[in-house]
Image (cartoon, rainbow, N blue to C red):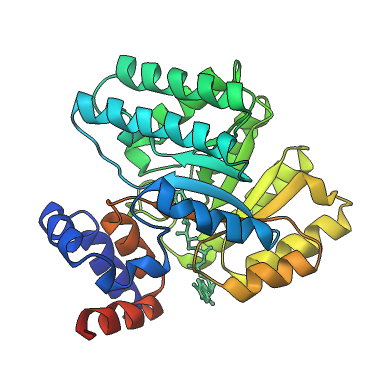
Amino acid sequence: MEALSKNFFLLLSNSSVLDKMAKKWGPRLGADKIVGGESFDQAIPLIQQLNSQGLHVTVDHLGEYVNSESEARERAEECISTIQAIHNHQLNTQLSLKLTSLGLDISHELVHENMTRILEAAKQYDVVVTIDMEDSSRTEKTLELYKHFKKDYDNLGTVIQSYLFRSNQDVEELSDYNAYLRLVKGAYKESGKVAFTEKSMVDDNLKKLIAKHLLNGNYTAIASHDEAMIDFTKDFVEKNNIPKDQFEFQMLYGMRNQMQLDLLQEGYKVRVYLPYGEDWYGYFMRRLAERPANIAFAVKGLFSK
Ligand code: FAD
């Protein structure tokens, strides 16, 4: 049943018709509980509030799979103005972005040009940028670009997904780049040819990747709402004398709020991933796929006045 509903929502996440309809229904689906507003300006008070609680933030302008050059350039502009606003408002937040919103599927030149402009601004204003990881057909290109840019821009992170067979090798190679990695289980629908399909294997692999990247001496973000993963990390860092400034926990905005605060209380660094923008549909559907319990507030939102 769980696998069925996961597949159902992952399938819906790719529907452009439903995407258009969802924009009309807007926050009634409950998206406002996990999205920080439709514009960066709307997200600012929320970031300030999270910061005042001691939480670090990474913001993401929602939207992916852009297939027009002008839109990809607009997305890059949005990233640059967000970086400037982070600086102007003295916000404690990083920027997360998706390469398919910047032209990855259009041309190498375009995504390269857009990323260079964004990373120049990030360097100027000292803002860390993380490249989110998308589906496996884009992993190779994403990591190639990451390695290319990491040489010139140190404030750059990316994401590795434990469901992919290749990830162990990728983490090993990225260690040569002193990579700032966010380690996750993975949110896309992948075939058994490239990814573990059994949850226990995905979980075990995430633990291996966390251990490997930390022992290789690299900064590691453990991005999971899974208590078992968090307990594993706490135990591992203690046994291996890994200092608290070599890792952080990351969770999505609106998920496990109390756990975020508890971790803070225990002295750990916690970062909240806060998406904003009008294109919340695909993000929202992937969250439903991960945790069907989230359906409750979506259905409630649909039928409330
Ligand atoms: P799951 O395996 O989904 O859940 C394990 C257990 O945790 C559940 O059984 C339940 O007991 C508990 N749990 C989980 N969620 C909740 C909740 N909301 N409330 C209460 N209990 C809960 N994926 C990508 O593919 N690319 C990315 O770039 C990417 N970036 C991410 C950034 C961040 C900060 C985070 C947190 C996730 C990101 N993801 C990304 C998504 C990730 O890959 C997983 O799909 C997602 O985090 C679900 O896996 P999980 O480890 O949280 O736990």
